[in-house]
Amino acid sequence: MSVEQKKYLKTLKINKIKIIFWQFLIISTLLILWEILANYNIISPFIYSSPSRIIKTIIELIKNHNFFIHIYVTLMEVLIAFFLGMSLGFIIALILYEFKFLAKILDPFLTMLNSLPKVALGPLIIIIFGANIKSVIIMALLINLIVSIITIYNGFLGTDEYRLKLFHSMKANKWQILTKLIIPSSYQTIIASFKLCIAQTLVGVIMGEFLVSKQGIGYLIVYGKQVFNLNYVMTGIILLAIISYLLYKLIIILEKKLLKYI
Image 1: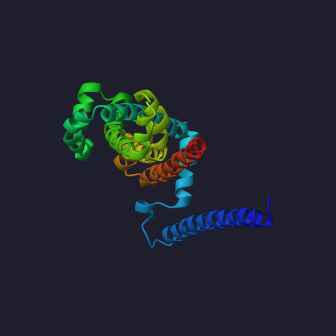
Image 2: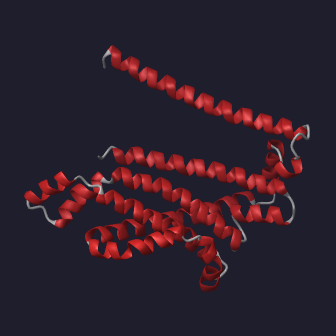
Image 3: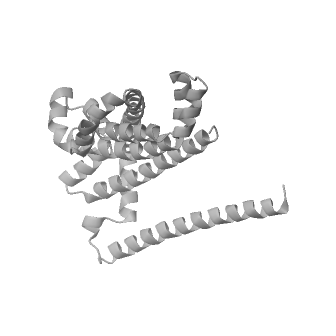
């Protein structure tokens, strides 16, 4: 390795450390400021809670054996709905790409379903599937599936036309074109759909938990509102922020792994 390469790698490492430091500093400053404002009643601790109250609430939930159950239920629902949404979205996007006429027929319906507020379907979902975990997963699936289909399908459509002509000129069959060109050239779009899908799935799961769940972070937030214990509400919000960040980082790790094969 040359001296210039070592300097470049060292610069990248230093920049990464700087970014982590500033991110930590911003979060720490906000938490300290939040605690001070709540302690001196500049903001209402009843409404906005405080970091110390949230920590006490988490300890209380752990002692009552509720903390990890709520996290487990929400994560399980998110992961099930995410994998279902991505799998179905990928398969349907492939079908639409292969059958362009069908895609043109379904295009306005996909747009309509994507624009429809899914929470409006909540009562119907509960009646059909019952007030249970299935309704939560269906709610999340309705939110992430259309986004996955549209994003992945547009990625397939963006395949380089000259490469397609090259494959056709070399007498490649549909399967070879699909597996050797269309899907590999759409990796980045598929990964981008992962990022959108995981965020949409978390939103859908929380919406579903607001409606029917008896466990989960969404339920914790609703319960806190019902008993006027806003510490539960703020704890739920903080937990959702942490979970969304960790899920996003998981997708980033997956992205780095997949891009090695491009």
